Image (cartoon, rainbow, N blue to C red; front, side, top):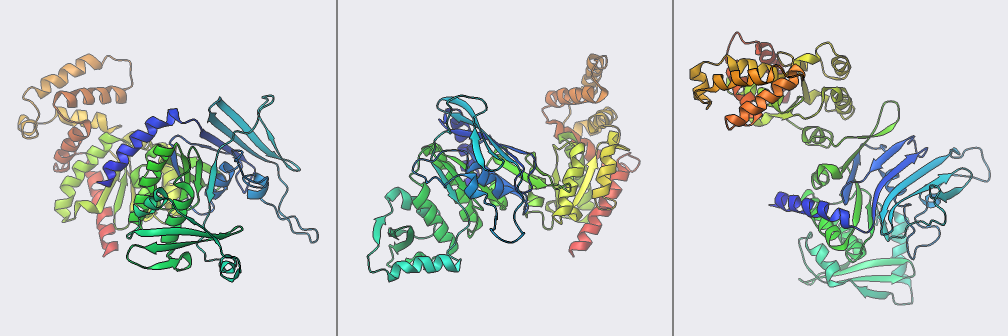
Length: 515
């Protein structure tokens, strides 16, 4: 399966990273295109920058394009004066603001770690953080922005090739370049040729089944793949920058492209940085390869921590017809799963209608809720906090963002404390039915004696005891919490009934809304 291929590739690339001769580790932008102070760290050889429109993705990509001196490039290529131009008319009063701008870089180079700064006051200049006789690191850089031969002036320029009396130069793509395309496209080429006169060029393809045509007759996806094949398949040690990599590509082809880009990065010592709106592209790199930008209500652009799947799916298009429950940790998730094990059959609902997400602290809930509201997803989220968050600032801020009556609390102060108490109240029959040993209560009492005199907080003590007990019984902590949640959900007098009733009410409203 392709998921296994991705995981294997992630491990290989992460292992390769310390041995790459060149690696851009960080870019820091100040005072440019509405970005006041943004630090972006690159931790994986293939990074995907995601975020809403106007969140700064392309600005970061263009900033990165200025990091290196590119062999063979012109003096106006890969410099901020070209990539961040200003409108400065000789007449009239309208012009872009003249603001100081700083773009800092940190690198790994063959000579060791280096830093550099581009700064604009009256004009752009470089500095090297006090290092004398320093120079900008050299590296091949490839930058691709959106271009699908849809711009009329671009089409007219290419058509000029056909009117030239001089035959165009013809350079056939190599086998490795064509093979890169073959791994993603549904047909095979017998030949692909680049026709060029001066700085104008046009691809011409011949398929093995006989069809021949220029790229004027290619789909946007076919042209994008062939152009990438031509331009990056043979680069070595380069920095590859691609804006909106998914443009014109079917989701399956997006997956294949991301897999083969990572294979190419592994083979050719590449660093790849992409921007994307596609959840398929995001899922194709590990969490430390995902960079989420967000423009806050205060118009600041910030980097959010890599979102857990439930949050990523909501913001990038995969939460339709699913109600999402967001809780704090794995034990809370287990308790909720136990509740749903009882609720689903009672209400005749399908388990796949609800998704539980966790491992996100309660202090982050209000920020997530604000993002869900911004992207029109707040109606599909329910927030379940630990009991000790009642009356907290996090609750107040969350209620300001969440939909009415979608903020709930687990019983007791923490789910670990609650689960431990309920475990000790099981009957021998219940313990036996659910796979606990006959001496389960004796083992719990011994753990109480060992840990109850510890100096840790009560919540930490409960976590430790529950972890030890679960391991002793051959279970995961979440499994024990799920068992207890299921048992308590069936007790009419249990203190979890208010949460169960609240969730049923939300689920019924959700189901009615879908119908």
